[in-house]
Length: 115
Image 1: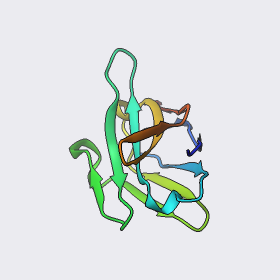
Image 2: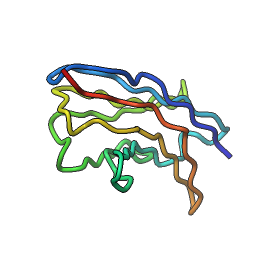
Image 3: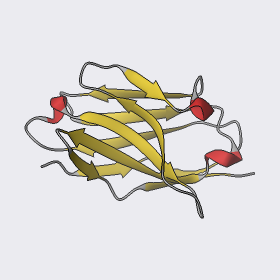
């Protein structure tokens, strides 16, 4: 079992940057596929970025070139560096861990991009 706690959200102006952090737990954290999802009001939750246990990354088309996902298995952390933020990036961002069919979610951190 793994527990996930997100942090780093907030209010930022368009064009600004934020770095989200996800603190994980569990003996086998390094074996989990990790990801960031987001959900805007009235919309379905969507994948933003994910990174597997060997560091291979995948990004949604809408964030390619602007967001970077990374992980530190020693610290049991996952990060999402978000640059050139747009108002449409406004959402509740969730950290996700997946392993052998089991899914774990954090409670989310709010990102609001507005002038």
